[in-house]
Length: 112
Image (tube, rainbow, N blue to C red):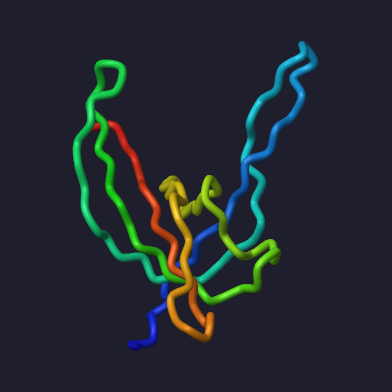
């Protein structure tokens, strides 16, 4: 296995629900920490959502391994942020048999 080149800083964020005072809630994003990552583009496509064109790009994001239950171990539905860019995590898998690295499959969407 080739050692990943962790050369980009990403902020791991988790969704958090806050009561809105009217019986509902507002979803915000809570930063969990900054991780070094290797980000590799995989495939892309264009979608039509609500009459607007949306570009959806998938990425493979490799980070250092973390034990299950650790706050810095990503989970699906969390996301990575790099400045204004947002990568929504769809799946997480061990990258090697020793658990030294974790691979996250993520999607970035933007309007065209």
